[in-house]
Image 1 (tube, rainbow, N blue to C red):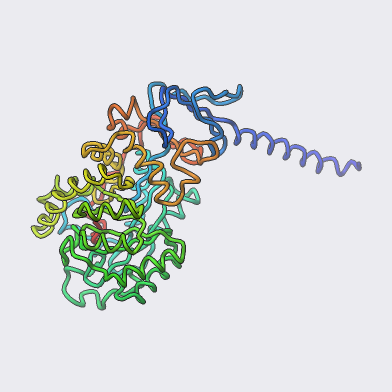
Image 2 (tube, helix red, strand yellow; image 1 turned 90 degrees about the horizontal axis):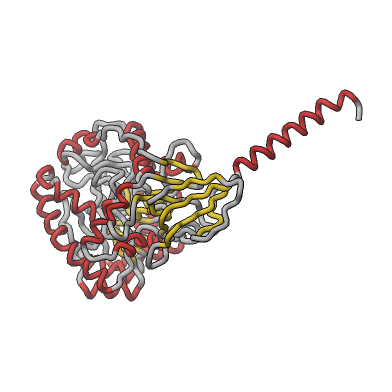
Amino acid sequence: MRIAERPYYLAVIVILLFSAVAARAADQTVVLKAARMFDGKSKSLIPNGVVLVQGDKIVDVGSTVTIPSDAKVIDLGDMTLSPGFMDAHTHLTLDFTGNFNERRLKELQTNVSEMTLMAISYARATLEAGFTTVRDLGSRFVGSPEFVDVALRNAINHGITPGPHMLVATKGIGATGGHFDATGGYRDKLFGREPDPSEGIADGPDEIRKAVRFEVKNGANVIKAAVSGGVLSLADEVDTPQFTPAEMAALVDESHRLRKKVAVHCHGDQAAREAIEAGVDSIEHGSFMKTETLQLMKTKGTYLVPTLMATEYILSKIDSYPPALQAKARAAGAARSEMFRNAVKMGVKIALGTDAGVFPHGDNAKEFALMVGLGMQPIDALRSGTSNDADLLGIGQAVGTLEKGKRADIVAMPGDPTADITATEHISFVMKDGKIIRNGPATPRTAAVRDDDVDLPVD
C-alpha cells in the first residue's frame, strides 16, 4: 500500500466503524414491561406483559420473554400495554366545534393554508391520545381544490410533522343537494357554478365512477360516500336515501375494482340496507337501522362504525346549532342507542370510529366508555379499537395486535381497562413505529381556533 493511499483507507475504516456503531444503536432492543397487557385478540388481559421492540417492529411478546442483557428496559409499572388505538372515522383537517353559524361565515374567510397548519395540531393531539392509526373520512374546503388530508398524510409519513398513520378519503362522494354538497343551504349560484365530480358531487352511475377514479388518482386510500342525509347539513333530511341502487352498485364496483374499501355515511335504514346489499365495507353511524338491516349486516360481514361521540357532543352543545339541525340531532341521538345495543346483542362486527372533528381532536378515547355504557363488554370495546379496526381497514397484517413481526405501535394506560374502561382516556405512553412519542404528560394543546375551520356537512 502506498503511503498516499493510507489516509483514504483509514477514512473508510473510520466510516465503517461509525456506521456499525450507529446500526447497533438503531437496532437496540427496547423492552416494555407493565403489570398487564392487552394483546388485541385475547378475551382477557395477560399478566406481567413484556414487549420486545427492535427498530420499528415487535420481535417478541408475552409474560415469560427472555430479555437481552443489552436491552433498554422501560418498566411502566401498574399499567396495561396495548396495541396502538385506531379510529376508523376522523376528520383531522377539520374542526366542527363551536358556533355553527359563525363557522359558516368564517369558513369563507380563512385561507386553506391556515387550515392546513391547524390540522398539524389536530394530528399531534390525536397521536398523543394513543391513536397511532386513523382512517380520515372526508376533507373538503368550499371553493378549494386542495387535498389537505393527502398532504397531511404524506407529511406525517415523511417525518415532517408528528401524527398517526392515515388512510384518507379525500373529498368524499355525494349527490347534488346531499349531505356532502358544500353549497347546500346557500343561495343558488353563490359560488358561481354547481359542484362536479372533481369536488366529489356526482349524479348517476357514470359520474360516480368518474368521481371514484378522480379521488384514487389524487391519493385516496379509501372511498367515502354519503348515501343518506346527515345531521350537520341544512338541505336534507337526516334519514333520506341519496343514492339509487344503481348508483350504489357503481360506487362499490368501481372502488373494489381499484382495490379500495368503501365506507358510507348513512343514518337511514333504507339507504343502509341498499348499501349493504351493494357490498359496502362499513356503515358509518347507522342511527336508524332496524334489526332486519342489522341481521343483513351480520350475514354479509359488513362493519358498523357507530361514531357515538359525535352525537354525544352535538347533543351536549345542542343550543349552538340551528333549530333544523337540533331536530335532526335529537332524532338520531334517540335512535342510535337502541340500534347500537341491538348490534351488540346480534353480534354485528363493530369497529371503533368517532367522527373526531365534530368534537375536539384528542378526545377520541371517550368512544370506548360510550360503547361500554350501551352494553359492549370492555374487552370487546378494546378489540373494536385495535384488531377490529385493523381488519376493517385491511391492515391487520401490520397492526392491531401485539405480535412478533407487527409494527411497534404500542400504548400504555393506567390500571386495568377491563375494570374501568375510562383508563383508555388517560394514556401516558405512546410508541409509534418503534419511536417513543410520549412517556409522561402530553404536549399542551394549542387553543382551538374552532370558528376558523370549515363547516362542510360531515356526519
